Length: 114
Ligand code: 5GP
Ligand code: ZN
Image 1 (tube, rainbow, N blue to C red):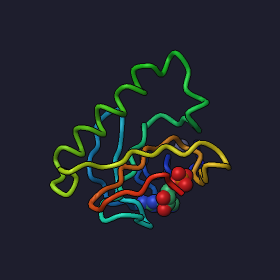
Image 2 (image 1 turned 180 degrees about the vertical axis):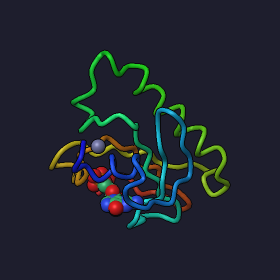
Image 3 (image 1 turned 90 degrees about the vertical axis):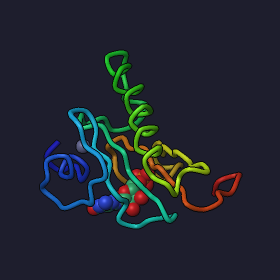
């Protein structure tokens, strides 16, 4: 997707502090961190929201969680736990319409979320 911000991260058309990358996903630091650790984990494939995942994306959806675990395990500040957030559409505050997992941690999280 030409105009998609996160596709531009995937294609290295805009700079990002990349934490992890393989053939399927990229993880990078959020530009406006909401916690001491705030990583965005995205599929390289352009999928707009959770609602746009199809049966075909079953492996991809699972892979995202496995990658999140792999990344989190390697970050000491996440040893005591962390939160994964996926915003879907306007009411959740989704601003970038390329599916992404927020991996947040390094501080105590509140519940219920805002
Ligand atoms: P959303 O609100 O869509 O769930 O989250 C989008 C996230 O992308 C926000 O946390 C925002 O700070 C982050 N973000 C927006 N633009 C950029 C950017 O150009 N680079 C990086 N690294 N993060 C961005
Ligand atoms: Zn995209």
